[in-house]
Length: 338
Image 1 (cartoon, helix red, strand yellow):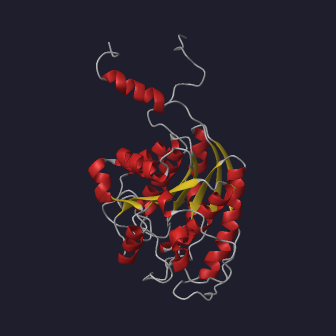
Image 2: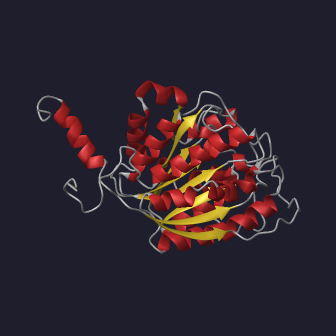
Image 3: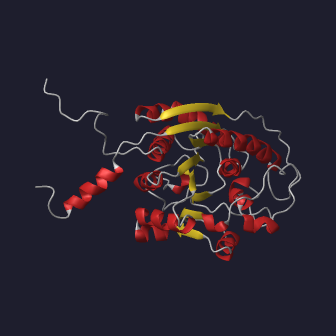
């Protein structure tokens, strides 16, 4: 008698969203940590692979091609951009990364980039926009990462990547030698933040001036993660027609869920909220690229690292459409009798 009453709507919901959905995924490692001052994020890709992330994706039915890591040796030169540390390295590394991301997406695979600090968002988002110009961006992070070289207090490039992509900020950017390969290709109206809880004053000014969709943890807790994602997507893709890129900083999660990261902030997303966010975007059928960044194996205890890597593995699976309620065997409709 389960088909009577309100439970029928629950059954219908599960029948829609628990259907088996295999993903073709291209994985690229971005071992780069010169966008900030703490060493270790460059070890993120190797640690994530060693934790079984790719094997886990394959075990849930994904067609995974691992393209290896971006091959780059840091120059140890500061470059000529005032108030941006290691900008020469940031530019050179991200040019290579952009090319690889474009290639993976053009090959018909969802691009999963394993960071690395969040300055690699310069290359991942640019590469995606080159391959699919009609793309919207979800920036899932405790921080806005939208400082310009002029407004930054730290000079760390991992706090600036978003500003380089936004068309409306072009006039506020300085001339950057060697950055000619990059140009802003996305409007502020096609970008949304989820999970903010540590935003600098000039970042807030930029967000307000550009009228951007910015959901802090206060809003997320107020309306719930599903409604937050639904609202964000309605703002950045009102016609449900654009490709979607999710750039997910592991510090969007609460430090209890992901302690091995460089700039943790209490009061973040639970792992359940993080995975539901990615599953919700996957269900649109338009998710084309995901970054998982700022995992730092050198920070915290062995237990902290295990917790963080486990969280990242669950996030990757959710982005691939993994349904935690399980699937029946493919092609089997009856229970074996003997």
